[in-house]
Image 1 (tube, rainbow, N blue to C red):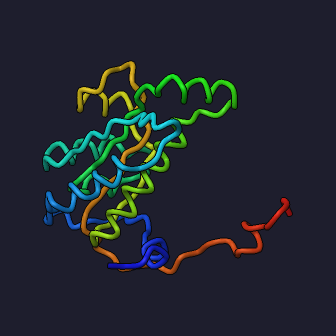
Image 2 (tube, rainbow, N blue to C red):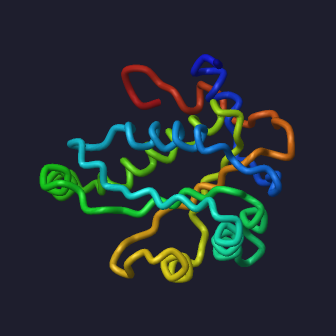
Length: 180
């Protein structure tokens, strides 16, 4: 098992998957449990995870995430975890109004991070996708029109190796005791 910093350093957005290799259910169960356990403001848990594992349906979902040359690889991902925003509890909703921050967006971002890190821990690749045809995905998956579909996380066995990470230097993103 990797320690957390090794896990964070090795996780990347994979954009090529072995479409012939399915993700084992046990691995998927652990990834989804990590998502379910992720923290949320006031424990609102404002999410529903729609998991697509059916081969034909996965290709349809992948095609609905492609457009203008974006995300062509998504049709080869054997698993898609779509995150639908659900109603937050009253405490989270009040906090969102008072603080002018939509906490469900933050919470769903945290859940997405848990999913991708859990996938990495299982030896799988992932890519968080925000560009997709929301109406088409709702139609394909029976998601009510009134709901917001925020993310599609493609998951599968990566075909390519790890790339060097390019990140801003510590001095550009970290300051202590005041903003510099």
